[in-house]
Every structure is written in C-alpha cells, then in structure tokens.
Image 1 (cartoon, rainbow, N blue to C red):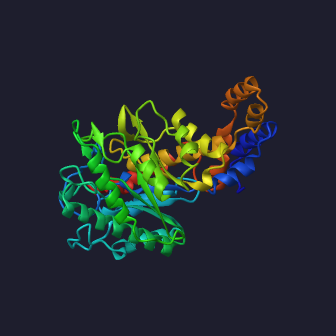
Image 2 (image 1 turned 90 degrees about the vertical axis):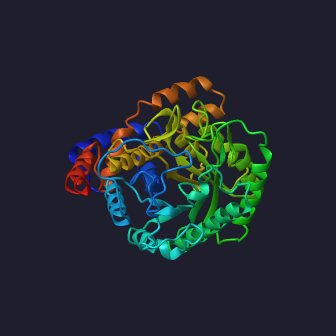
Image 3 (image 1 turned 135 degrees about the vertical axis):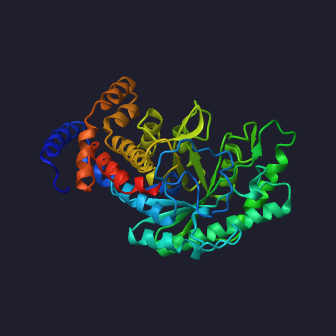
Length: 422
C-alpha cells in the first residue's frame, strides 16, 4: 500500500487489527476491490444529449430534470469532465458510451449509417487512459422512434432501420473491444410500449424477438464483444405495457445465452434486484448490472450507499459472482454538479463492494452450521465495523482524495472550467 497520511495510517492500523480479529484480511479486500472496474456512463455529463445535433428532443420515456450550469457541449468537453471525475475515483474503470455520442464532423450521419470511424476519438481517449469501453445503440430521441416503437414497430421499414442501427452498434462495440484489448458489452434497450392498455400484447413481442434474432445473427468474437439485453417494468409513455419486459428478456437471454441486464431502477419500487442475481446466473453466462436509484419511479437518481446497493454488492461477493458480472452506472441528474454526480455514485458503488469484501467469514460458517442466532448477531455487528478507515486508506493508496476532499477539486474545476461554458 502506498504511503498514507499519518491520521489515515493510524485509523487504518486500528481497523486492520479489528478486522483481523474477525478473520478478515483488509489488504486482500483492497486488492480485490482494485480489480473491479465500474463502467461510467457518458450521459451523466451532458444530460443524455448526444452529439448528433439533429434538434430532436429527448424521448423514449427519458427525462432529465435540473439546469445546473456547465454541462458538456462537445466530445472534448465531455472527455475533460470524465478525466476530472476519474481522477477522484479510486481504481481503474471503464466508459459506457451511447451511439449518438459519435463524432460526425458536422455531417448528417443517420443511425443506420454509423461506423467505428465515428468513435475513433473515444477509442483513442480510452486507450490513452488504459480503459475498456462499453456501448449502446440509441433507440430513442429520433424521428423513427417518435411513436414509441422501434425494434417491435408494426412497420417493417421502421424495424429494419433499427435492426441496422443495432447491427452497426455491435460492430462498433467489437471494434472498441478489439482496439482496447477488453471485451465491450453492447447493451440493447428499447423504449417500446403503450401508454394505455393494449389489446394485443403478443404480436409486438413476436416482432421484437424476430428483430433481435436478426440483430444478433452474426457471431462476434467474445474476446472483443458481448451482447446484453435490458428489460424494464414501465416508462413515461409506456406505463401500461412494455414490450421488452423482464420475463421476455430473461427468456430470450436464456434461450440465446446472452447477458441479461438488470437495472436497479427498472422494477417495481419495492422490488430489489439483488435477489434476482443468483437465480439469473444459474441460466445465463454473465449479467450486466446498471446501478441506479429509483425514487417512486425509474427516475435514475445518483447512487447512494443505501440498503439496496449494499444488498447487490453483498450478493455478488458472497456468491463469488463478480467474475460473471459487468457493473455499470445509469443515472442522470442535472440539478447538481455533474462531475460530483459521477464521483458520488461511483465511489458509493465501490464502498458497497468494499463493505461486502470485508464481511467476516463467520457469517457464512454460522449459516452452514444452522446457527441462525449467531448469523443474525454477526450480521448486525458487522454493520459497525470500521470500513471507513479501510476506504480512506485505499483511496490514498490509489492517489485519490479520501473523505470529502475530492469536493474541493470539483469546486475548483467548476469555477475554473464549467463556469466559463455559459
């Protein structure tokens, strides 16, 4: 571990001894945490705007509220903001990019025409930062998605347009993975659904399955590329019926051995995704997690260190599922500093994983022996263990500010850079 401040080192030494007394190796936990990448979502930095400059408003049931000054207006500004956020987050991470963030040189390039060359700037930036990338077709905020249907559209011409967009997105994802030496997860999410009760729920799902079969028809090298499909319970404009429900995509993923994306905000507000993870991973090779925080609905709030997040992290660590799980963030808040939103959300996700990695092994041993009293007692006792001292030590070992000192750097960047964007 790199040199820490005196106060951090003292606190860590005490915490290390306390954890050791419960059979926990804090050094091993920090080493394990350093190997877990989080995929930062580019769309937090510009309120899901993209760089097509088509004049299309945000659609597909997505809403970003707030007007905090300083949002990124160009790819270079967005990359600079990401650089700042990444400098405040311990560990080595990834970038999750949507298709309408390509760099098109001021030319009209429709989504069924995109190519890897339009993402060269992003690939070069990721390579310079030693990062992997993930990718998403953008099946919203487009005239051909204006009626709320894309891959399940009743008109073949519209379906074909979105099929081609998704096919090209897979090719772009594969090019990213090959260039960066790390497989890109390309995740298909569509907003298709009805605001009010439909008569025919089956036909759109039949069309969606057929479209997906066409999208995934070409095999791609898994060393470069992995496919994921993402479900949703409802959205704005699709409150009564979503074509790509959880049951639909779980069945499709199992049948075709694709990654299933579980988004923490895409289920009923009282339904957590932690309990789904072990069940799903019995039948699909890997999963994609979108770590988010819904409040009353899928409102994609900045991730906080709450019980839902901790349950997800604990499920992954307790069952040794991290190697089969790709973790990304998915929220967008324009009411606060956007770089702070990235930093807070990512650091909280890492904190939850650290707490899980520091869990005393005696909990599992008590459960295996049938001693449920001890299991409950130790589970509650573990909540008071000094994980914060281990977190601070890990941050400083990664040359990243501990505590809230990162906020000073965000404020400085805001005054020196963001405030000048107008």
